[in-house]
Length: 136
Image (cartoon, rainbow, N blue to C red; front, side, top):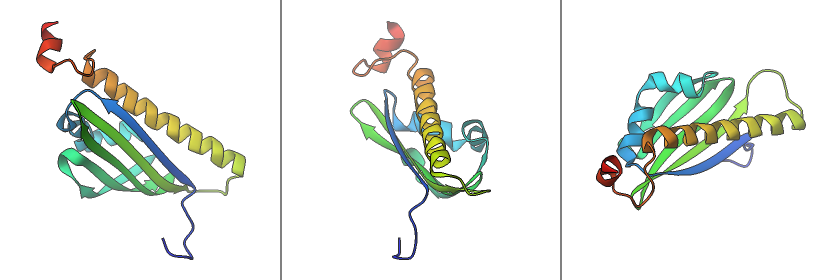
């Protein structure tokens, strides 16, 4: 960022551990149809497809900026890192409205991650081998 550039209004970071391999999580985000389910007010365009390591998008619509899902292999699973750096479009917002928007976007990011955790893990706990989980 140059000296004249301002930091984005929304700078959101989230991390969630999922007890599944990165390829399993990557498959969810690889389908562009899923993007409108997770971010219905945003138009995303991939500028870096990192395969099992995630995606980077430019963002348009209700926000303008960038977003990233980075999938880090850790132990027997994946840390899903989420980054959103963007500015709201439309009329100027008050500081209070901006705080509310940051909170809403952060909660939405965590809801996506926890929803994926619930579906993809299917009750498997960290440290329990996938085969042992299904035999359980």
